[in-house]
Amino acid sequence: MANRRLSGFTSFLIPGISSLLLFQTLKSQPLPSLKETFKSNFLIGAAVNVQQFEGKDSAANRVIAQQFNTVTPENIMKAEIIQPGWNVYRFDYADELVAYAQKNNLKINAHTLIWHSQLPAFMQHMQDPDSVRKYFVDHINTVAHRYDGKVFSWDVVNEALNEDGTLRNSIFLQKLGPNYIVEAFRLTQKAAPNTKLYYNDYNIEQPKKRAGAIAIIKSIQSAGVRIDGVGIQGHWNARNVPLQDIEESIKEFSALGIEVMFTELDLGVLKNPWDNNTADVNAKADSKENMNPYAGGLPDSVQNIQSKAYEDLFKLFLKYDKNVSRVTFWGVNDGQSWLNNWPIRGRTNYPLLFDRHFQPKEAFYKVISTKAE
Ligand code: XIL
Image (cartoon, rainbow, N blue to C red; front, side):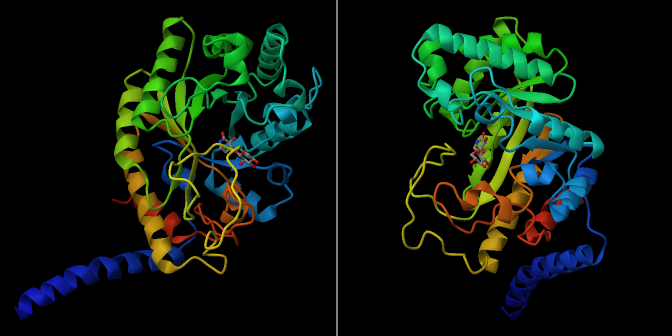
């Protein structure tokens, strides 16, 4: 009896001790680098903002140079910024990003050509299908052509699906019909022959939406048009990462002969006001009581849940490293994450691997440790 109690006690204690020791050992050494650690497995990226690629955020710039080998512009290549008026383009930010990436040896995943959100005002309520078609063709030709050879890849179409796997009733579907996705890829392939072409969406690890994504990918392929990969955004809650669905998705998407990527990874710790796990940028909610419980700091218990979730996820990515070509975090540190202001403004979320002072979190070391096993 005593023995059994002792062995139960030790087996409970030893993993705790060893992981504590592991973290202390790792922390006393120079900071490991994500991109170095996973260099034989997949690219490691972060979404970057203007301050960062203009080199005005020295702490972030240090982390980016040390940790990442690919970046995604968080906003500046979206239509509302890059074509704010009809045939009026604003390329200065994207050009600065290209220069920053060249200087720091970073690949760029350009984000995004065709998306119903963050559209310029002039095009949001366009009624005439010919005008929408002209916008569609000109936007792709101009923007994709200009950055061909300068960016590594494009999210050609973003978030074209509803949760049930049907096509979202966007302005593009309404005015151009269901073939607009194939057309977007066809045009981009022509305008940017040296750039990889991806479909990107959230929740496409979920079975119904996944089936919709598979149908899209097959329709592009059977039209003889190139698609190189699919991006699963990965805006999940740390308490509820759908590992099984993710694994199934990696298998099913890679069976189509394309790369699988995790393109906007963040594991938030705050509850959202609705049951489904949307990442629709237009889904906003008012703040209510108890919706911002960690404004004063992240409790260890929650930190542990998050670290374990990141660890499990990276173990899965490593298991499928032949199929997974990139993992990109949606931001550099917790303070800069969009999840502090979405879907409720002014909250304190902790979704990334670096804290508000750019210090690596427990989750960072857990992710690094998946390679040691
Ligand atoms: C978000 C940005 O992070 C925010 O700064 C912006 O206000 C709204 O968009 N899916 C996407 C990204 O494809 O472009 C979104 O980025 C997050 C959800």
